[in-house]
Length: 231
Image (tube, rainbow, N blue to C red; front, side, top):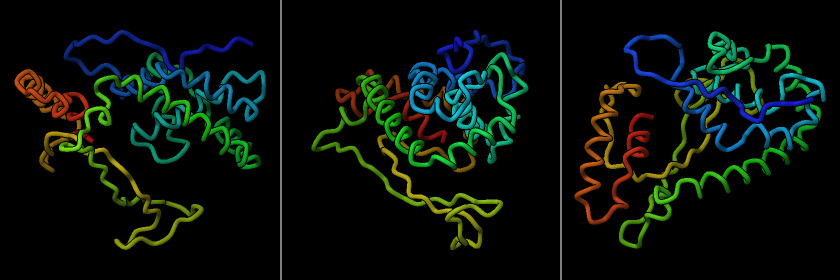
């Protein structure tokens, strides 16, 4: 059975001043998943978790779950958020299909863990070289080191999950550790919207000006600085 290699469609984007598609900004994430060939990687590592003739392949299911989380969903049924825009996200598996996929993983956790770790290693080997001169590790020097910030955050669980417990703020869930590469030029004010396109445009423009004037180009990375502030 033939399966497409792209995870998501590649629609043409135009600035019209109208709100035409919900979650259209997620197409950037879809483009990234296409660029790293996630669908083929998942097909190689996780094909045993779906029937051979299944139309919804593991790469698409996993990508839809990741896209759902980026869109603000919290549970597997949140993939319905993507179902309203088939031109951007393609066909979306039903909640029952996702549930069956998860059930097969539950019965073969070691196989999934091995495949996931192998896939993550391959993805890293593709992503880091693709950054080119924007790779923060290449910009680091003895006098301007790359700072890795390690901190904990809180993730709320709305129902019983494995390992979930009460948090120090009175909630219920998890407190994972997160490492971030700190190489931005500054922080946006707390009141600023993380989706403020005008602010992002101003910051990119300012950083391009700084980049032209600065004799040390590793101090400036327009896109990543903006992303760090917007997240």
